[in-house]
Image 1 (cartoon, helix red, strand yellow):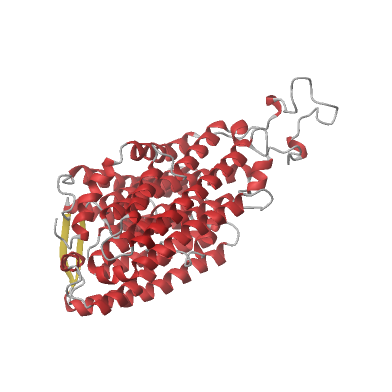
Image 2 (cartoon, rainbow, N blue to C red):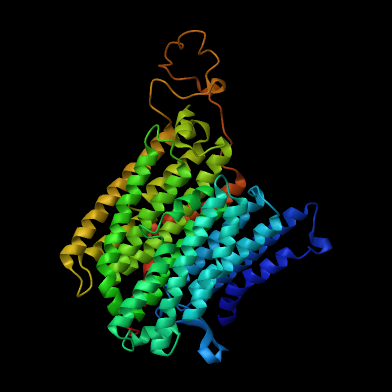
Length: 545
């Protein structure tokens, strides 16, 4: 188990180095570019298999216990240790990261985004995976910070070199926001380490803030929380996210939404809740207030983009929806209750699955239409996606209703549990204030349903207006010759509807696991909650089961 966890963290980094080296003669094949893409699939596949074996070998009877631990002295002068381990909180995030990275590598093997060398692309994706996995596996604060920062440069280059329009400005905004937040976060981490005498996250969590004064905890939560809030992202520190998603290549958007945003919320749960509980209690009402503003703001921004004539970008709309969904995660954390924190962790995983699938689908639609502009997509009628690529349209509708929180799918449980947690927050927190936040969050779920259903109606069914926005090439051949044949009722014959390529085999292979897990988590939430709940109970109790 120790070897497996170390392999999961280190193997992508070694694979990134190997990707930059010349391929051995026997592995070059007919196309060297395909060889390095095949290398990416192989490495990420091996990491996924190792993560699954790690999950199978995990002691599910004691998910609150740190398992597969490695503890080696690294910098004795600072008491920094290479300390790795997983529990019921980090294991699901580790599996989600390994799965999404493998699916992105598989998708890129068949649909590589336009840009420079495939070698650099594969190497950057593998470095990104290693940094993300390390963030969820390390148990030393300084090591956590290094892993947290390790993902920034690969994502910057993925956006700047393989992205679409405005990619340079979007990449710079991403790196500047996150680096500035990280500088403040480092100061908070150093404050905790110097005042407590250790950077060990397990020891600090067990101490439960008893070795830190309230003022130190408040300063630490403010500093570390700002850095984590930028990465989450929390309103109003979110403005880098829509630009980054709009400009990023498809796999970049999937990884950014699916795993990078989770690093911020994971830090709140793993570091701030157990290590500085008094500081968190001070800031919890403010965190909850920012969270519910983000929920409503993200939903209103999506509604504005979805309306007819707004020239809204579907990819940008999904990015703004992430601001709202991550607001629910922050609201659950702010309650400081087992119910709310479990809901936050569940919503984290659900968002990774559903939004990852949505970005895959939006990327495929953009490839087919040449644009993600909602007015253009809705104007290309013939029942839009339902008439032109029915399986693709059906999967988009499925992902949309999962995102709006339909009962029976993964998006439902996280939102419901966070709202329950807000109804009865932890002792010392204002119950009237949190019930107000709960009501605002519940209103946000209605707004989410509104914009998602508008997207489904427009993109999947097309515009319901007398004057459809058809290009001359898309119109029925007989349209200029006179009225429609009797019985047509104004509809164009199915034979004249321009068809699009429906879901391809490689797309089905990349998307099916996400759809299946969305259903599984919705119908059987105990699989995930059985892992997280004992670990959360122990974390909030100060290391006591």
